[in-house]
Amino acid sequence: MCGILGVVSQTPANQLLYDGLQVLQHRGQDAAGIATLDGQTFHLHKGNGMVRDVFRTRNMRAMKGTCGIAHVRYPTAGSSVDHNEAQPFYVNSPFGIVLGHNGNLTNAPELKQQLFEQDLRHVNTSSDSEVLLNVLAHELQAKSKGLRLDVAAIFAAVTSVHQRCKGAYAVVAMIAGAGLLAFRDTHGIRPLVIGVNETALGCEYLIASESVALDTLGFKFVRDVAPGEAVFVDFAGKLHSQQCSANAQLNSCIFEYVYFARPDSVIDGVSVYESRLYMGEFLADKIKRDWAHVPIDVVIPIPDSSRPSALQLANRLEIPFREGFVKNRYIGRTFIMPGQAMRKKSVRQKLNAIELEFKGKNVLLVDDSIVRGTTSREIVQMARDAGALKVYFASAAPPVRFPNVYGIDMPSRRELIATGRSDAEICREIGADELIYQDLADLKASVRKCNPAIQEFDASCFDGRYITGDITPEFLQAMEVRRAGDKAGSASDDEQLELELAMSASSM
View 1: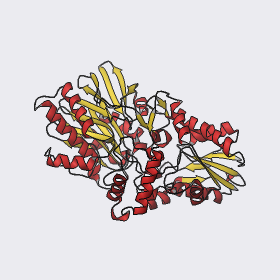
View 2 (view 1 turned 90 degrees about the vertical axis):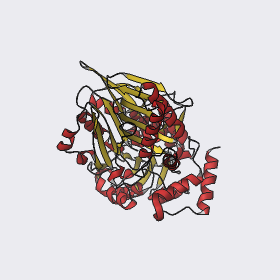
View 3 (view 1 turned 45 degrees about the vertical axis):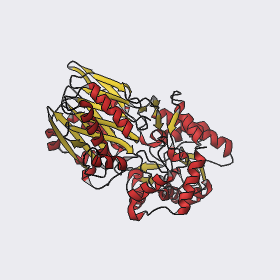
View 4 (view 1 turned 135 degrees about the horizontal axis):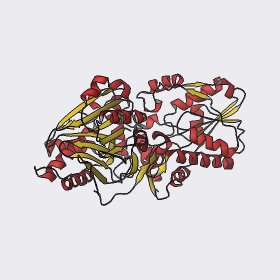
């Protein structure tokens, strides 16, 4: 998962882009980068770390120009320590182009080979974003026929990109001498929104991963970029758009609403906050129906994503809601920290229990989801150490049983606590007295209640149904080996058979 921004402004863009990245910091803490365009010159600065650590005053002063793009990186492919993997990426042929990408190309290895053998282009890193940049550059060259770019040629190039690239991608790109280009994959898996600011000097346009960036920067929300659509803003401030895929259909990533997106964002017509309230209501109804025998004294959220769900659940069950954990906001999100040991160590640094809310009580802990189980296990133990009599655990999302290949770092089945385990076994693994999962149908209903027009979702990490149609057990096995190397190793024959049977059952 990453955060992207693109702006065509009437005033210097560097501060807008920096402030926007601060708002999108939750989408990636591994690296950050900003590129601005001043005439025909790009000014680029990027590096590993948080936004506040990557940029200094001297860097900001050097980034001149009224337009640019920006990126915060959360690694799903490539190295999490190599600064060369930071975005935006740049090419100078056939045009100067900088590009930032959120998502994951599922056919990146094949594209990389095509670029080298057929398109005569070289890719320097293991990042699929650099692959995507070179595919776009090649298609722009082919469609412009060596002449000056026009809007028709740009949209034709994006059409070809959609035909060649598979997977999830939301993209912003700045083309020297032309303008700002943005487009979204044909399934609309990753989010992308457009905002406008009407000034005395003319219209300014901002394109971002989440609407919260528009709000905080003073831009008015216009709409989401549609699946398969391309949007182009020229340097005169005129916006052009075109549908570039004949088979586009919205399949929003449902995990955006569960965990990744900020609650004050609106994605594809859905208030993230409101959808989380509904998740709490549906989960409460399940507890009333199937777990009425469980004596709950207090409902406690695990900060922060689960708070709306936990609050609504407590209201619906008419059980006291209490804040039982204090969060250290200077520790990063443990879910997106590379390395199991680092995640486990950071849990106790990140959260501290308030003994008063646990001592002598039967507590229901509510989290947004359970992925690896490391955080859940530590938190359950923290509740017991604080004096809880019984510790029940509820997840606003269903069990995460399958790897995600569209931009969320769930690459290994071995790291997913729910893979190959029943709910009772997971409960024992995390040390809870009872474990209650949201049903997938209810999770989807929670989002649809906010926007009934959404028919389908990417819920592959829950149901194993990969909507791009190109994901096989062999692909998942190869992905695990490629990302984890010798440490993870290859899947055994038993694991391969188990995954094939699970994927087959999930598609029925």
